[in-house]
Length: 427
Image (cartoon, rainbow, N blue to C red; front, top):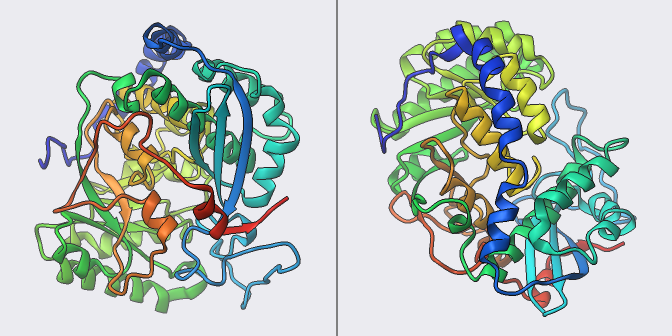
């Protein structure tokens, strides 16, 4: 056990169907709009949304020069690939979308979504017309309406990226209107010192810098055959040697394998003592994920980075297809939606560790999650390639921990000049 976290696999699966029948109806219906009601009681003033603006930004162009996108500058992949590595204009960093919402009293709230220029178009041509004129404190009701009116072309993916950015900006405004940090709007007992884990290839360097857990991306998949498999096994053993026996180690596969490959790898890496294997197989293969959860022991099989809203996560949980879930607050629906997801999972004793939790938005949610976890950050680079905007939106952990302050909202304050400097394209 570390930081109050139990490191063994949950044993809930034998009775999960009973939990679903008995618990989920209560969870799904008892807290509808509960946060909104509490927040309105605390607010001393009321505001009305009068404007929404977006910026399509590449958060880290020096690290990802080939992922930037602008009109007239479409870049085809350099080589044909069997993987999803080339994500075009919707890459999560290069297609980031900053959303700014302004009220009639001059307050500004900021959210981080995705979808690049396409996400900005969804907001400008559709969603903003159902947000302008509303009270930001009605954020849950606004979310439900936006989800409904986009359901014929949304429900997953790009539209939810855009909706997430709007929701986070509204929640930011809620904190600023109440003059309190967002985490304090949810709980009186937040976790203000959050253990961090680092994701990236330079795991030895991360361990040297105080991280007690590291996640290694493994790039070889089915297309690379047995040579690639052998390289994956070699890489994970080298990572363990680099970080030593005390640092936790995880592997991120990014949908490259199938069930048999994953089981073979887990057996070959048994002596490495992996904490988890992340997203090993295609997203909609719930049956395959459920098989891995049953057969790969004691390593966790985890997923959720590319799942969307409570409805998608309910399916993941219904299949018993993850030992731990990883919603991304900027992609899965925003703060209130991810809080709902985590609470529903906790009823089933499934923990939530947010994907890329090491943002101002993610850290506030992590501080009030119902089960212990760590916060992900992308490993620090040796040569400081992170740009100014990236650094503003990615707090730096110290001695392996993130710390939260009491600044109202999410503590995000972005000036227009900075956003314009990193804007990739405009509608």
